[in-house]
Length: 372
Ligand SMILES: Nc1nc2c(ncn2[C@@H]2O[C@H](COP(=O)(O)OP(=O)(O)OP(=O)(O)O)[C@@H](O)[C@H]2O)c(=O)[nH]1
Ligand SMILES: [Mg+2]
Ligand SMILES: [Zn+2]
Image 1 (cartoon, rainbow, N blue to C red):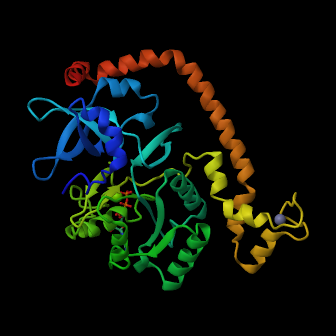
Image 2 (cartoon, rainbow, N blue to C red; image 1 turned 60 degrees about the vertical axis):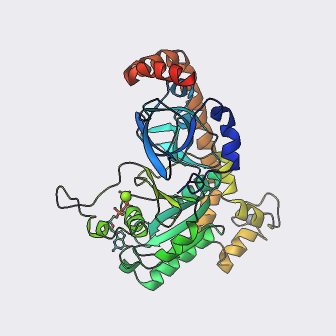
Image 3 (cartoon, rainbow, N blue to C red; image 1 turned 180 degrees about the vertical axis):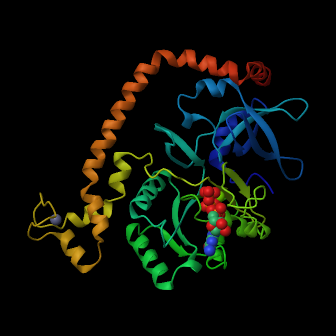
């Protein structure tokens, strides 16, 4: 396999040119924990994974968490003379990026995966099914630049009618999304996922914990032992919960990023993406008889007509009507965030240098040497 199989293209190559001149190597980040990172680079005859650390410069220049390298990023690596130690010297501009608000730190953006072509949201027709959550997912996916796909997994647990009804609801929520009914257990629908996996393409899987993201991925990886292995090997009970994000290359080409389940319903979003997620209704509302129609009891309301026809669901209409309140909330949060950032402004530099010492001061030297 080559860098092209990993998704390398002309755009990345153009941005890499100045780093090439420094003798650095391009690589794609496959896992990372902020201390060490796994990066795939071109070896003598195949891709090889090297362990890399972050250069002091990249760390210092990051103004937010989202500026730090994330899984899926293309980076410039300085490999030392031994060929073993590598430092990440720069992160190439992302061609797409899926991000949300960080858990427990609601005001900071967290990158879920970079440079992805497709985002697969896994849910089921049962208790996990939640229209509002799906709308949130659609809005962060719309902002990411990737294609949205929804899997109604665990189809074996529900009736065909129930699966199909859920699928239709999703299709109405987001007409641009592909919707499939799947079962990791019976393999139903799994062959369709391969259609999103051309060489160089990257799929990110997201969805609540326990919906079957890893089970589906294990099937695609051809690792059937993992199906029964969903029982925790150490305690012998419970299931294996994904704790780290990881990019995996599939034997037949294409890449998959598994993610820990998203437990937080509220995600980072902004007014623009929120409005975009309702653009179909906004267009419909343009057909209301009165320009200031409240879509309640007003005569000639196009939305109520659509509701009556069944082409618009009551949940989606309500979400649309709640949108202004939600935008107001977003604005309040944004202002709070600004105030916090300003207050922290003075402390920031001091904290950074403190953090950097904990990080390991020797890296600065590595960076300097590598840069020569
Ligand atoms: N019946 C049935 N069970 C499934 C299916 N897919 C997954 N499961 C089971 O659901 C449980 C959770 O599956 P995982 O693949 O670990 O879920 P996950 O989405 O990766 O969860 P996190 O890693 O916590 O985010 C496991 O016990 C699986 O065996 C399915 O299609 N049908
Ligand atoms: Mg998992
Ligand atoms: Zn109206």
